[in-house]
Each structure stands twice: as structure tokens, then as C-alpha cells.
Length: 164
Length: 253
Image (cartoon, rainbow over all chains, first blue to last red; front, side, top):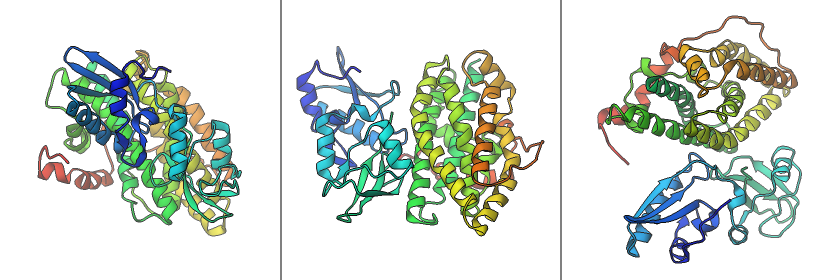
């Protein structure tokens, strides 16, 4: 999967644009920026939504345009659907930031199914690290998350669902 | 040809839009906080998918009519111009009814998207690839609830059986091929509903069996929605859905 790497200056600026619903996560760490192209008339930034109905996408597109234009780059943002986003595109740093923020990072597809469907206790609590956790709801505060609770320290926390 | 593609996109989008609206009516009214959030999350996914279909439909139509936008498609059509099936416009009754309607749709939606992933139309294939990831979660959710309630208490079982008996006669329309769907299939753009049908009925049968619910012996079915002939519920949905755009044309957030 190609990610944007040819334009370090632009990427540095985009590091400042965050997901409004998960403010610790930059859109670069999220893997939603699919390409950056320098064209005669300015920059073309292609982004892809995490979930079809993600209400953050419009805000993210506006923020990208505003951030880059403030830095002197006329910008067009285009939303693309293929290839479809997967949680595999969240960077290792992004995963670490999610955990620090209190959202458990997505497990591999098989483990995810066990945790969400069969009630297997494998999602580690973001507060104490215990895997003695139970699913409260398959759907959480946003489309991308499920709600869990730790049975040891009793902390309720979000789990970022695997999407492949 | 372009018009048939446009009509086909409406068929795909309208089911998701009308069901998405039905689910949105439950916001703040779900039987528990978790199911409330789940059903409205599913609604949000469906509306996201609708936007993708309608944006594409507006592009297709835009070649001959530049006044068509995703919003005008969603909000400014008349009832007979909507192509959704009768199943999804059925009103919310109890939770058993809501879950059964959802299951009957999800179990069809998944094999439909599997077929559309192979579409020769790149944009339809892209939307299907995107949507199917979400719809897998929807089907897991609704089929688990069908089993839990069907195989639950006497009360929940009876309510589920009542819902299944009421809604079953509506599922045939989902997989009944209309001339537009036939044309799209022949061009390699649309799904082959005969293949979707066999997977669909198999899934419905398996889940109902696991839920200890009996499958109604019913050989005819209600139809009309795909041709624009809707039940009375449909206009009531539109009166809520279209109110703002009809009152303040072209308003934006």
C-alpha cells in the first residue's frame, strides 16, 4: 500500500490536522491521506473515509485546505473510495497514541471477531493492562469503536474495531 | 443506458436511505442505551453509503442536467420516484419488529454487495468494497439479536415470531428482478439477483432455525416499491425527511 512520503514538508503540515473525534490522532497517523500531488495549479490531496458515514470527513477536508493554504499552497482535496480504508493503515505511532488516549488499538481480524462475537477476553484495558475485560456494546461512541469495560479496575473504555 | 444506471443507483441508494431514516427515528428511543447507539450507528453507516450512491448518481445525471445534486436527489423527489423496497419503509413497532426488519435487510445487503464488488462499473465496485466492511458488522448485530430473542423467553419468542410472520411476505421483493436490474446485470454492472436470492434465503433459513423460529410457508409476496408504488407509510417518511429542503430550498448546513 503506497502512502505519501515524497513531500516531507507538506506531510509535516498535515501532521497538525487531527481527527476532530480523536484529537490525539493526526490524519497522517490515521492513514486517511492517500496521496499528495504537486500540480501546476497547486496541491491535490486525496483522502479516503474511515467509515462511509464518518461525519468527521467534511471537517477534515476543510482543515486540510485551510492548513495548507495558510502555508501558501493552493489546495484541492479529493475524496476517494478505492482502495477502501483499513485499520492496518493506522501507523504504529498512531496506535500508541490511541492507547495513551484511552482507546484500545484494533486487534487482528481473527482476534477481533473472537472479542466482539464470542466474548473472548483479549482486549487489554487501556488503564491497567488487564485482559479481563468484557464487551458492553458492539457499537460505541462513534462508528469505528466498540464499548468495553475492565472487570479488574472497572474502567470503561473504547476499543477501535478492526476494519478490513 | 445512462438513465438506467441512474435508476439503478437510486434503487441501491433508496433502500439504504429509507431504512437509515427509520433507524434514525430511534435516536434517543432505543430499548437500552447500547442498542440505541448501535441502531443509530448503523443508520449513520447507511447514510454514508447513500451519499456515495447519490453523489455518483448526480454525476451520471449531471451530464444532461446540472441542477441535479446529491441533495436534490435525496430531498426533492416525489414518492413515486423513490425506488426503495416496501420492507424498509415499514414503520418501527416493537424491538422484535425493528431487529427482524434489520436482519431481513442485512442478510440481503451482504450478498448483494459481494456481487456488486465484481461490478464492471468502477465506482459501484468501490462503494461496494467500502460498504461491505460495515455491513458485516450490521449483519452480525442483527442476526445475534434474532437468535437471542427468538431463543429467549416465551414473550420474546412470541414477539419475534409475530414480527417474522408479518415481515416475511416483504422479503421476496428484494430479490425479484425488475427490467432495470436485468439490464444492469446483462451489462455486467448490476448484481445477478438469482445468485443473491439463493444465498439470502439460505442465510434467513439458517438464522431463523437457530433462533427456534419457524419460517412462514408463504409463496407470494408484496411488491411495488421498486417501481415507485409505495405503501402509505412512505409519504409520511418523506414529509419529515423533506421538510427542511421544501421549506427552505437549497439550504445548507
